[in-house]
Amino acid sequence: MTKVTVQGIHVEVTDSIKDHVEDQFSKVLEHFEDHITGNVEVRISVNQHHSHLKSASVKVPVVGSPIHIEEDGKDMYKVLTTLADKAERQLRKLKDKKQVRSGIDKRMQEE
Image 1 (tube, helix red, strand yellow):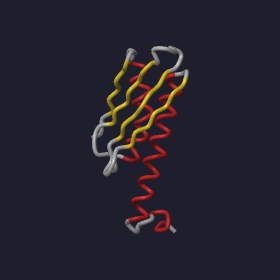
Image 2 (cartoon, rainbow, N blue to C red; image 1 turned 135 degrees about the vertical axis):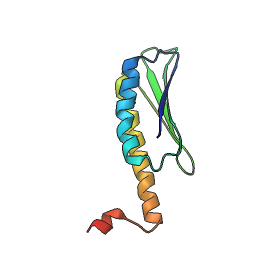
Image 3 (cartoon, helix red, strand yellow; image 1 turned 135 degrees about the horizontal axis):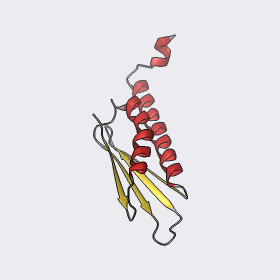
Image 4 (spheres, helix red, strand yellow; image 1 turned 60 degrees about the horizontal axis):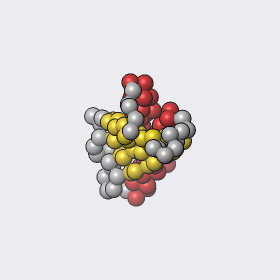
């Protein structure tokens, strides 16, 4: 079972932020758990010089090299949603690439 850990840097990680991260990344983990090799790490921070800027990064360990994605913005919840969407796109791209290389394209098998 893959676990999502949330770490706050210069910001308190509230229960609502944790719930939002778990909600957003649960979809990603559901579809791509076979390709993820460890725990997913999400880091949240606030820019000390410009406190209105929030940033978040995610590290997803996969076979080969881990996927690392960063996102900045004014609203933490939008940043986290965008981060989860980007992670899902990267994992889908990786999954499709592995299927093509192995000679198995599930979309073609369904027809």
